[in-house]
Image 1 (cartoon, rainbow, N blue to C red):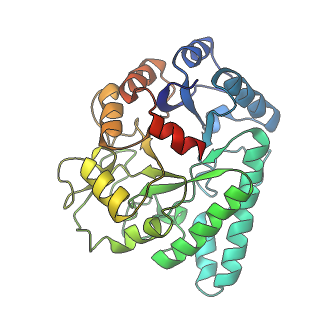
Image 2: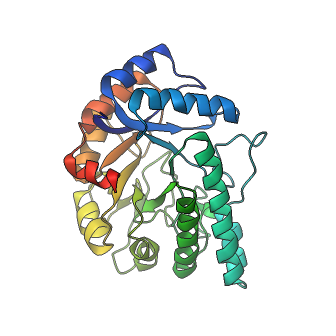
Length: 308
């Protein structure tokens, strides 16, 4: 039985003895894989089998395989997939073609992931592509047009789900306007709900997708104290009510520098604000344990969401 509402990162291409002890004792919901964990198909398949042998076949095996800059699969052994904006540029003049190849692209990604045992892909990005914002999003986004983002985002989700991969839409309620990279610093956006309508639109339209990931962003006119990941106001009033999103809500990585303080409290505050599951991506078991205890055990409500 999986006990704790956390998905963790691991150190290398095989589990360490200490990671095996941690996984057996605390039974997190799953593991998220990065380039450091992946060499070729046989290696990573073996690693995933080893994880599932401990956590069970229902364990969440996650990855960020967006295409473009954010690709975890080794290009020596897997196809290279384009960034989302490639499809958005085609959509400007040939929307039907863009829809078709977006679906095919994400289905192809999904098949590669399914073949090795991954079941959740942290994609697609539904953020706005804005020229004057931080480059952390840029071509990872489909478009500046929220309607094109929605149309292509839906095709991406359909393609992944056809391949039996759950998409995780991100970064809800919208990262596109950030002037800072949340990996390095907490971005602040000084706009009200009306002014953020384009940012919110794709997430509202695709609010039936099973899983979403929060943005580590402070929306000052909605909650002047807390970033979205730690904000009850944003999660309950904006994400759950205004956007109508009822699915599984993952925090973005607790290790990003947008968040401050001990990991126990980073995790605890995210869960208390309304996140269902936290991500702790850096493979430091001392800090992972703090986040695990902060996240606490999974609820019956989350069990029901995961089983749907």
